[in-house]
Length: 499
Image (cartoon, helix red, strand yellow):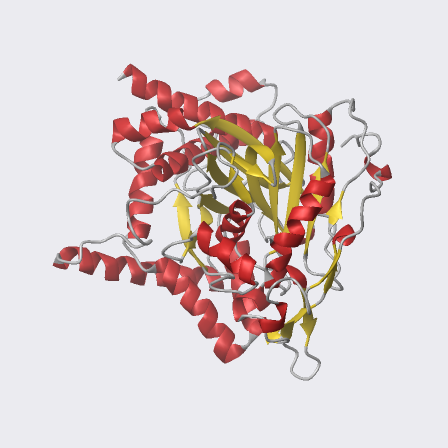
């Protein structure tokens, strides 16, 4: 890819130096036990094939002022013990411990000098964030950094990029923490909130009905068997979306596409489904459309329009599964995190996620609504099982009895034998301001995972954003996949309005 001029010559703006001693200061540092062991799940994210970083991209409606951000970080994020501690290897037993340290914000807040009139600004920002996936954060400092890019793009006046190692916390924890550092745009004193699901928990069944309980047990047993088979030998089909060996070590490209939440709600209400059902149906349709084109390109002397008009270019019986992550917490309270940072105490924090192996039915459908119906059927079966808890339990069991290396190998085999990661995180329903900067969009994603594609879906006010993390060797045209997702939503919505 042609490199944007100036990307290699980024320099930091000289700003006031902030050094925070979190061992003696910071409101609660002295209450912490120095040298606390990393949890087994946190330790797992340092294993080869699981060394994952979370990236949260925040579009700002205004220019970002670094001195304002730094001053607020001192009183919020740095009071969180995990963001002011080193992860140090214990030489005696090989474990890792959290050790409080002095935090120099100049090492964590990166503000490159940029030309405000830079050409192809969207591409520049995309390349900048992609370049982050080529690097890791030195273990000599807490494993997070924040990049502030004051360059105007097509959907924001400036962009902030928060990078955090997955050992610090999972996506839901970090989303909640980001909101705890924000306030409602309409009320600077009010903390934003996350939408509350009508259904409690992540398992759906009728406790009073025998057949519902029997289905729960059966679905759970089938899920565990498939999990074991996948860990041993069962692989997804080799498609243009499937990554090769070592994909977790290759650079990623991050792209996103925002659609109207109202369009999804039209389908949701008409079909009496959930927003998640519709999102999964759109994803299934978009993947089918993309793969149909890719397989069609193998035919000679046919242009793209002809390829798409052909009845079907897809091979039969494609096995394509996503590792679909579930938040195992019953609730995630923003006000509790605010209180936690003020007191400098941990509370309930970390990585508490399970996952299911979610099969996508790849094929062309005459009725676009069939994609949503199929997706609902599959996800309902997963909800009527204990699969998220089972995968979490098995990983911890292997870790306890066979050690961290065995648990890392288990996870890597499961992830690499499937095609993609999928995650769906609800965002705030009202507009927010991050340290006084009104947010235009939120786009979280990851790199370091052993698969070529991750699709992350996040809602914000009246929008839904599909965020793609791709290995360009396997998927050289991620914007085309974004187009296919958006086109699929349009086809599904049009099918509703015509009926």
